[in-house]
Image: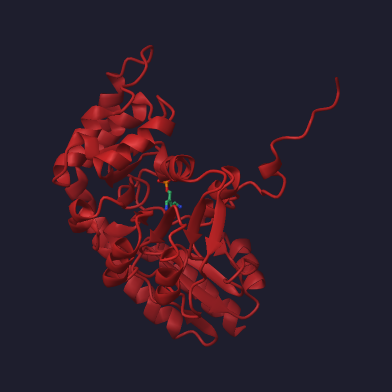
Length: 354
Ligand code: PMP
């Protein structure tokens, strides 16, 4: 037959997630660490990979890595779960806590993958948009959850793409106001140096998402993890694919995690470059950056789509949100190396003042 029947009805309105992956000289669009894993750690990782038996299935739960992460966070193995990037764990969240007849409270603009996962799983999305400065509409969120019908909430802290932390006192009020599962997405927490980890034991409904993709320079490897209460992790175990975290990633992840202190100078440099970029962006006439606790900066600029194109024509890739809902006229630049940041700032200055 040279025809095929329709796919599932929930796919009809869905557009595949497009990270706008375009090769460029300067890749400052995906909030990666601009420095690759240093040579010595890479060598150690490669020799660990050498010893992986490729003919055998991996440890389904990556228990050795799980134990390392648990120990570093003062938790035990059953309170940690690894995934094929944070992305997989976000999908598993929608599978485990969403579904037909269930509701997800979203605070747009935020990471668009959340909304896609909800649509895929037939979960109703209840949007409580952020205020004009992109802070959370705290009272509106608290009021909405108090109706009692929300099944899960994601609080992104720092928020992507807008950059700022969620206030801790708000998250604590939220955790008290609802028994919905509250995921705090801490993908960028190493750049904000802030975590809700101290509150895990007091709140069964709190779960944290972390990733190796940003501070630990492993976006290419695909490793993310959850910290949560055992009863929540158990629900995630029910929906996960048994071997989603492959043996090669586990081997590399262990070496990198054991060497995590060596990433600290890179993180410090990103934080200081973030401050410099914020100041220099604010000094460009017509460029309006938002404060950032992360490794990227959102800014508004006139003719944003054209500015993006002109930067791209010069080999500088940043992220174009100029046509995205709630983000009209905005671009997001990831903090790169000092040299990359200089080139980006010079190019933007020249484009905007031309
Ligand atoms: N959460 C947020 C807020 C993100 O920006 C990202 C990456 N873009 C992720 C989670 C997932 O990252 P990864 O799948 O690379 O771990």
